[in-house]
Length: 249
Image 1 (cartoon, helix red, strand yellow):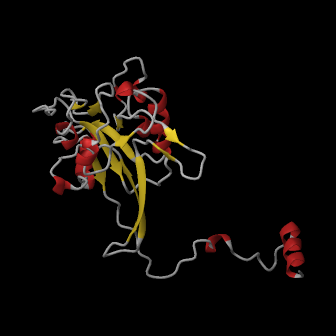
Image 2 (cartoon, helix red, strand yellow; image 1 turned 45 degrees about the horizontal axis):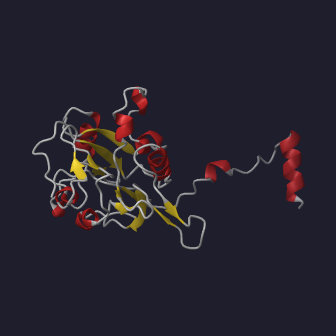
């Protein structure tokens, strides 16, 4: 079995704003594209244009309709990928050492040359964040795009995960959560960021920011009313002619 580092120098991870995410799947497409053509082996698809398509994705978005006790129903888009847990059970059950956690930054990775596709890590992960690539026969998972963040030849603004770089709503944030002065640590503190399923005891690094309360209307409001004012009765010129013509129809 594989052991976890007792201490990591940094805790790199994602902070995802559930209030801002619009469920556009841009992060899913960016993740699939980048990790298919860059790190490791391609993320395969099976019968992608057939009646029963399937494929390997490292990031997925789940959409729910929830009704808070003190507000109206709202739709919440919930992105989910590997959470790079501090006490990652997927690492400690791996019989070959293929699954490991980097001591330098806490990122959980899979050495695909050592993976035998036994699936123990997928069974151990309480978040369903690992997938077996059907073509390659090895486990795949989010890498936080280590080939981007570790690449000094890339511009600074590109040395972040592809999903973060692509998100049009700015719902995804990346940084060091071990640094209390980092931008994402401040965001977690300000917005009350939370762990996914903390009762599992895995201590996930990635955090979620809760949706903000929605306004409740006490009376019906016609948002188009300002744009539907009738034409003045004494209108002249073209508008007057148009109003008189339309009123005869």
